Figure 1 (cartoon, helix red, strand yellow):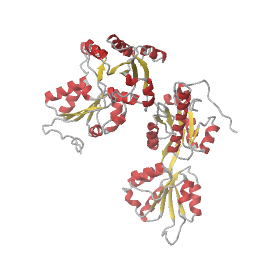
Figure 2 (cartoon, one colour):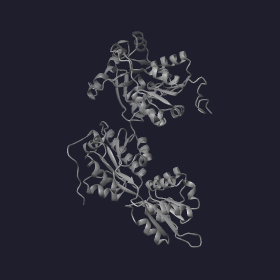
Figure 3 (cartoon, helix red, strand yellow):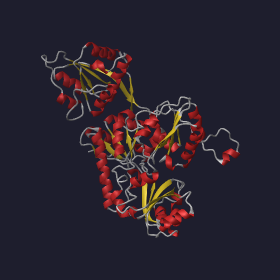
Figure 4 (tube, rainbow, N blue to C red):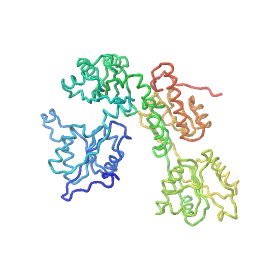
Length: 555
């Protein structure tokens, strides 16, 4: 066991707190270390720059305090504004109050000048602190760009911050043939290249420039020291008001275009940078969104239905009490919402998963099964084939009066659920208590910005998991733009999409949300391969927005 992972450091007896200086990495939340996640979970106060806060906030407790950072500069001091406080003051104040403080910085604390000064301040004040290293941007970004910094020849690597580099630094790096990793900005990268050429580097030395490294907004350009200014201009990156964006430039033979074409693993993901609309709630879409992220996509959940309690709860209350008194042999869950509805009733009555003892439990689909496992219940029956009510019936045993002491099934469902399962169970000899556990209503419209993105082509793809998601999304937000790739979970959903004037580009081979995501990834991979083979720049669907919406006449 690591000496840092068993428990959080104890608070000192004299009442002072503790500070953890934590490296949040270059941008990808997945690069946080296990120790970083542990420290965040125990924080009372989280102090981070705005662009770092999004990376670390999700691992902290809901009650954590996140004071806003305001840098005290000369202008503020001269203006006589006394309320502005810098990070060091916030850290010290919270620690002296006995709080457990996490100070999160971009990359690694050891390469952050401000963090070093704050550590010295803690040491001088006798405040205990620890350092949790993070992935430095100068190392992590080249790895995500497919640019190794060293090879079998053991080439020297020099790290340069162009903002503070001295003439001597430029001269030393320019005179060597090692790899140079330069931290700079978009609008100053050409000037940094000029410094290296003036110091002795050949103008034809390969160079890569990466912006927004390790995130799905990452973009890398390959050029040489002598051509980088022209390359960025031709790519219409500069001039731009976003010229102050930080970049990592790697200078050396390992950044040559031919080598990067083979090693650019991140930007070559099938859905890299695609903004994918998932018309489900965050809870429903959690595993699906994770899968989309693994393909390089940026999922955006938009609920199209809202779930409300049944208008008359008495039937549901009687059924839940019947579970406890032994009225049922089986309970069948057809959705995550059904699990949630029963779980809420259990909690209302002070019950837990132990109340399912002696009752067989069935679940339609992997997501419903996962919700049950989260509740503490392992399903006895999940469809082995099609993940649907019909698939469940294929595996459901007929009622046998010899082996089944009770012939009744509790089926909690939505108010608009299909009757397929009820009819099939009755045909198998079972009595069914078909109970409305929740009502589904159309969700409220998403924010105006989202609606405009849907209608204006801001999304690259949309995943439709049912006919109702098609109807409801169009009803609350409008019809997706003609450039948006439409992916449907099955023929019935595809037919509904076509009836709404949408062309279906992707059809899942099976009625499974994960197979649907796989099918979209296959579509994206084929699209990328075609562009590469044609010698064209790989673009996302949203980067091509012809006027007007597409329509397809159904036949």
